[in-house]
Each structure stands twice: as structure tokens, then as C-alpha cells.
Image (tube, rainbow, N blue to C red; front, side, top):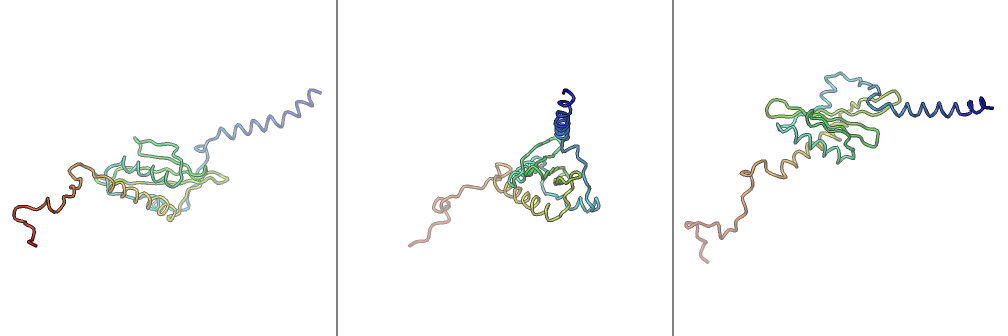
Length: 174
């Protein structure tokens, strides 16, 4: 009788062990299926240069852009200039911002989607351009227009015309 119970419990126990083992394997443990494009071509698709030396500003704009497009931020490393986000539990994107010279910042984005044998790199230029870099450019432009960088660049207050006249500029007689 005890061997009969042991056999009956064996399959559920093995299934539970397999299930727990599968849960222990994180996304980082999944093999990445590389793109069929060359490394140079992929870098060209995944990278854009922005005319600002402020790497933190670009990283914040990257976070805002990802959130605006429905991604949940999973990791931010300001020291490394990276942000990782997941959309719908399937699409994972990492964006890295790093300086180029004294006046520019390069952003490289890499998206991965799960497939049966691992995670496949997204290598579609339209995906990166229209769903990340164009919105990021708009975010950076809006950010730049939202507030001046220094107080002395703030616009002058509007002065009513009557108050702006000098002694030489008398209003025309009626």
C-alpha cells in the first residue's frame, strides 16, 4: 500500500520540483539569440547622438520616454548611465547613455523579446526610430523648452507700452 501511495505522489512531486526549478531561472539566464545583422549595422540602428553633454538629463528623458510608452522601469543605474524596462512582461529594453566628447551624449537602446529558445534581439530600424528615439528627441526638446538652464537666460517680463517709453519717445499727438 505504501509503494502505491509513493507512486501516486511521485508525479506531482516531480512536477512541483520542475516548476520551482523553472521559476528559479531568471530572464538573465536565458540565452540571447543574436541578430542576423552585422554588429556595425545593429549599432547604427540602436544608437543616436544628442547635442547635450548632460548624461543625467538624457537618462531621465529615457526613463520618461519608456514610461510614456507603457514600460515598467525595472532597474536604473545612474553611475553606469543605464535604465532597463519591461513592457507587457515580454518586451525588455535597456537604454545606455554615455558621453561623446565634451558636448554630446550617445544613447544606445537594445530590445529583447522572449522566444522559445531564449531572448531574441530586436533589429528593426523602424522599431527603434519610431518607438524610442523620435519620442526621446521630443522629450529632450520639450525638456529644453520647459525651463532655461540658467537664471540669466530667463525671458524678460513683458512691459506695457506706456511704461516702456523713454523721454525721447513721446506718444503721437491725437
